[in-house]
Image (tube, rainbow, N blue to C red):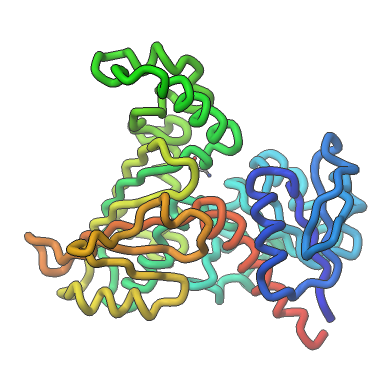
Length: 350
Ligand code: 2RA
């Protein structure tokens, strides 16, 4: 039978992308129920070409639901994912609430789909968008060469901070555009753009070397997520991972520069072949022709795009790479949908 799906957080930034994804991917679902906060209840949203009324989040909305996706803040997932499980659903959670819980698998279907069934709490977790923007490519290279360490710098888009991040960036660009002398004196951009929204410094005409909240030893939460989640997904609890996360004035699509070291010597052409044949990865790597991925070209697409692939000059067992992934699609909604589809396959024949 076709399982019933609930989309919790259907009206948010990721929820909106989710409805588009559910409308365009091969349809494995029976009923799709849309759920949001009481504030959004009664709205009518289109999914699979049909208008569906949004229901207010309450225990009863999970009755008869087989899979419940959560695209909501951590505290909402913490409270409601167990309620969905109690009512008989498998919860697929896109918040940070359960990612490092040892009884909750953290799944990227191209890398560790087999972990989906290993869910004693009835919950499967979706990684953070920054981890997701590189881990499909890194998983493929790990299978080929055996990963021994990662050094990562991120270039993260404003939409990682939700609609408020997008609005702040657009407002700041509008204000900055009127003065062509801006960017030539310390503090002039800060004074001109005003409201910093969710960012700790102006984002227009700038880069901001901080994402998330401050944690121990000066690390940002986002940097620890990249490290801890990569280790968990790859099943390498001791993998050395050094990350620095930076916000850039891009609306949507995270980029990462990765220095990856392996157990054996690497070859750039062979690495291109490995990545080209990996599901979910596209190689765009011809710098002589000006071809490499950029967020402006990648946004709205599903794969991880990889370019600038080079063997390290000082270490024949390391690669330098640049990659981009849409943080709202593979970085959030798409991976959640893919996990839910892996769970849905369990219902085939039932
Ligand atoms: C960000 N990764 O880009 C976060 C969102 N989950 O801010």
